[in-house]
Image (cartoon, rainbow, N blue to C red; front, side, top):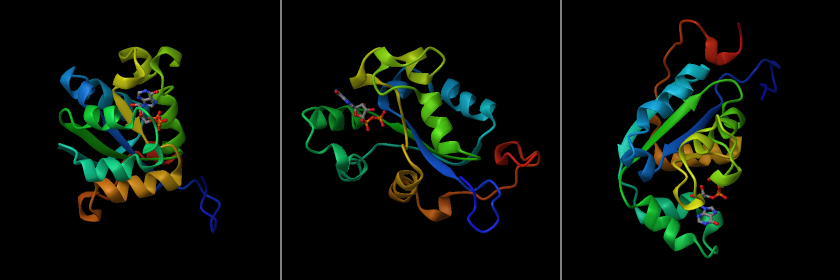
Length: 161
Ligand code: IDP
């Protein structure tokens, strides 16, 4: 994604990543954060919380009519989540690639789901699926004041090397 005015890479692209309750229970938080750091993305927000039904019904509003919706909400409220905002060049699409297919059975090895999960109802992690979706989800889960605009000394995340 490029800035319409300058044509330069949009260094402010952000996405929402959430480690689901099974990921927290299974002590995968460190390994998952490590993958995003190692890739070069910049962490701009992070918190652990117990999700409310209200936030989840907004977060998954496009799935409300699905047969698995109630069990999805039970799963997502079964324990704490670790919710993060990651920033960097093309972070939305690259995060989806790093997360892997929704159904772990179809997720490639090397992806979070492909390495750490086997069933779609316990697939460890969420990442926004579009730039617009990411903006909505970030607003839903975070207050603007809790996102930090810090300078990365090496600019790895911007793609402007
Ligand atoms: P995504 O998480 O890969 O973006 P979505 O289709 O948006 O996939 O589904 C949201 C979440 O709902 C999935 O990550 C998974 O936890 C759950 N889910 C999706 N499909 C099923 C299903 O067929 N059975 C149970 N849970 C499902």
